[in-house]
Length: 185
Image (cartoon, rainbow, N blue to C red):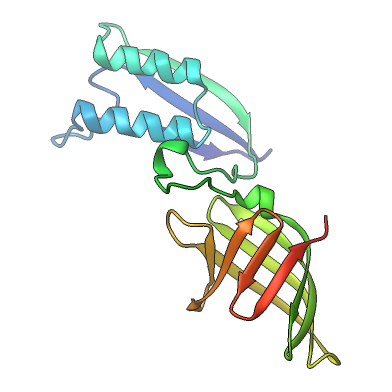
């Protein structure tokens, strides 16, 4: 449905074909209208389409045109937005976004030690922690780790240890077993 091509200046070109035959068709295996609409919604949710572009494309699928229209728009390559579409969040409590979590943090675990680190939002479901930990309150060690959101929760597990889960009470406080962390800024 969308073709993204990088050019030497690191720009992205989106080609959108508005035609009931061209949109989503792949030879002898054309997509159903429902599937095409889902692809459009996903592209809008991922920020590839504005709401007006989405509505125009949606209308063209429901009421096919006889003459295809092709539009191309240069678009600067950008860091992916760290948001989960609201229609995909089904938990009964509010989602804490990775963007809200990102920042400087400190952690204490008695008797294990303490840490200072920065949390970076890599995408809507992934954080990266980088900093140092002082084991047993004296031996400093540098670390980097990725944490991945358990679907529909505010819990993020360590990439190589799904049982090691940070559970966010709010955007500034998290617990994991006997350790607690708080956001500094």
